[in-house]
Length: 494
Ligand code: AMP
Ligand code: ZN
Image (cartoon, rainbow, N blue to C red; front, side, top):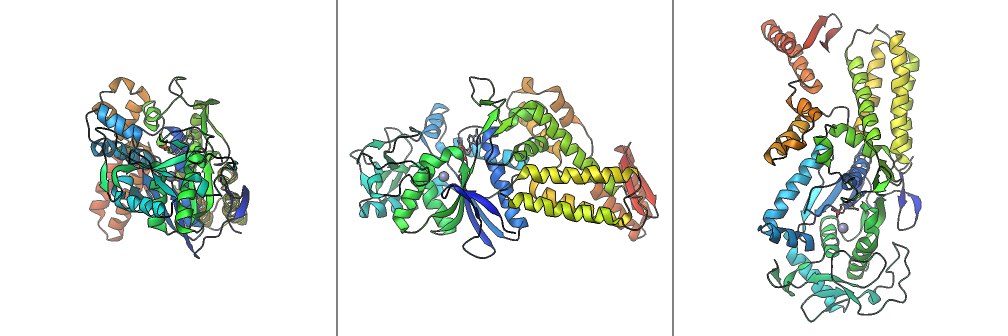
């Protein structure tokens, strides 16, 4: 069965087939690096990450490009306020963004930066001006003439037939519903950072960045373009207008939009006190794996209502999966196999695939793995799991984790990282007792234990018992009991 995805352009669910066999070219609008990312931003980035991982699991080679908006009105304003150059200012927030993304298991896309493509963008504007689609204003800015693009409004389903020719807007954030000629290129105001180009000094508009860089990396027509639902209009509408009037071809075939995240039922806002960056949550002591799990748990087209209750439940769910895996790895099973367990594992893999094929229904995929864990735990207790049932059950967990990426992840070093960052920022008072405890615990992770066990096995295979004993003693010191049995090596924490 093929993946079916909702396409904002056609406003229906369609079978997803890329232009080239076995290869998906996708572009996601990335962050504007002027501040710390909030959990709403990461809801969208995780939705795209889940899609990317599922496409790969489905056998596609995925080219996933994301832009970093490293120049815009806010960046220019804030960098001047802080006495920094635009580059110094954005470098800091880009680094923060990439650390945050890695912390919640987002695989890094191919990154493209606006400020590294300025000449290409100026050239693009020049070409549009030759066709009279772009025009130059008195101050040297360039605008896109919307009246020249009759399909304007097709993505957002807005009717702009009565649009005024020449009415303009020149801020990066503007009215949701007004269609105005938008800035492709902005001439510098006195003292502003700008670039000298073939169309004069200035800087690119936000919409232009995405058009130019996506087509440069992925070609004039590619498979899928993603972002949060707020980007449908005007950002994506403008990207389409620019790109299609430049090439005369379809820009992106699928438009993938994640719905907004709410916090405790309300729009996130600083004034309501319900605005959280990722680091705010880790400072409170929540684990990155719990955050990822929660943000992935609601299908991307449903509104996600973020609550602290939900976050606690997510932590319990992740723990249950990790414990189940440890139980399987502990060994000591009677030989043979139980056909019921064999088919449980196979059916779970099929159910997860069917759920994700159905417009990425992550909630159902999670439900499928928990049903497996529930049934297998019962079988454990009655001795109905046999030695040969372990590999297929583990394989189902692995399939799940290829997408959700919470079981293998080790939270402790990430929490240490946020702890160190808070100290460096002089925010020690914001560190919760829970984070302090997690960051200061010397507890060895499961992954580290398993690495040491593998070393022990290798040492024993080479009959280097001295080395094997030394590792065993080291683990004992870290509170891990190692038992060597005929079945192999087992471990548990004291
Ligand atoms: P920005 O850095 O503001 O350009 O946003 C980066 C990404 O986060 C975009 O794809 C936005 O659509 C998305 N986004 C912003 N706020 C939210 C929210 N509350 N819920 C989900 N996605 C959001
Ligand atoms: Zn974009």
